[in-house]
Image (cartoon, rainbow, N blue to C red; front, side, top):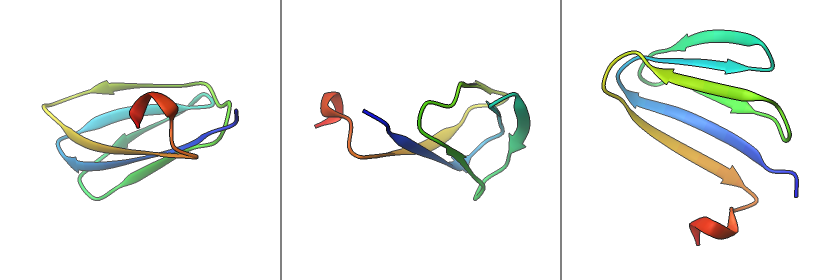
Length: 61
């Protein structure tokens, strides 16, 4: 199933790569990960991140 993910950085600094494009997220920034896009992330500091998946992942119910 195709699933979109949105990562919202609450605190900290986080390096996110989506489809070979890397950016550094700061608090209040978001990264949209399209369905099937290869992605990775790395915490540069302690972080709180809110990940939202649509449709909802069955393993998160």
